[in-house]
Image (cartoon, rainbow, N blue to C red):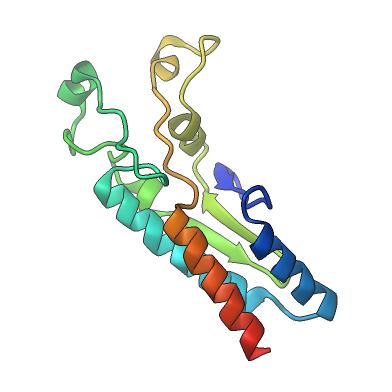
Length: 152
């Protein structure tokens, strides 16, 4: 998947990782679980785009006045020009992995911000974290994993 994606790692999520490893060892197909988690992430990211907040609930840094004035549409909406970034999130759920993200490479600059080595335009973009999981997402994923375990 080109663009930027989020990797759910065991850091802070040891219980989820332990349960998933138990399922893998048993040979269970995790694709249905990962597809459900992918759908959850689509919904939570859509809501955060509407609220214009990061996964931890922090509001995104406002647009610069200069950019807002020259923006052809959606002048008061952050990370939305043609609505590709928020609308075209997707996931791939396999029996052993879940990949979640956007096919657009520019998703990374919005997530992490520009750097001094970049040309003036992109370097001026502040980080506006939009991709990731909230504590509410983590809690829901814990419950989904628990439900999946109890059904197997």
